[in-house]
Image 1 (cartoon, rainbow, N blue to C red):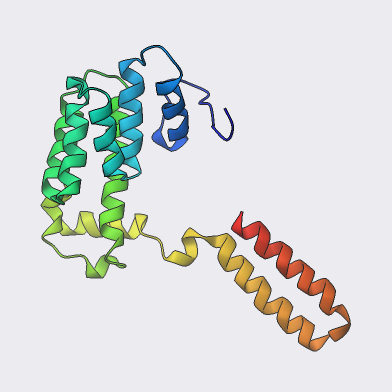
Image 2 (cartoon, rainbow, N blue to C red):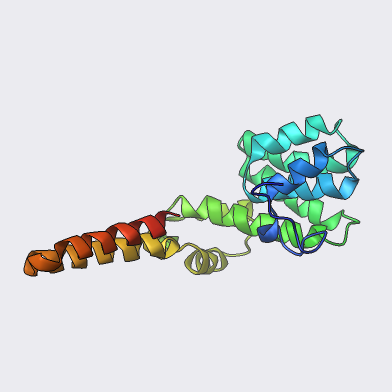
Length: 197
């Protein structure tokens, strides 16, 4: 299995640990995949907001009844109907018999909230009507969540910022000391290459 991360435990304790390629490989590996594999796969797709792939998985699985509540989340997101997404997540959380599902639904809910709120760029720009739509109780609760979870872009990708910082300062060094120009250029290129991998 090239470039596929095999989980150390099954089911994975968190969707953050899940490699979706592993689920796909297991589905086509032969035999009939068990229900847990389908549930974990569709949960992973929802966590990454890959709504269309979740819909395709539901259809590909023969529209198993157990996947229907997961599909409802994707279907609502494709409309897009934020309130219906949240309602479907709440129903999924309260109506499940799978022990790992509640953890996954919490992670999907968190990722969904972050994705929705990130579009506003700042907690100050978020409209109050989203409070009930995203399952918050108050504007303050939503604002606090946004402040804690919506980081400025520079904090999300520190390696790119660090590379830019190094490039700027090493370039300034080159101008001040032309004898080390080739060495500094090499360092900049190595840093940029490392930051993009």
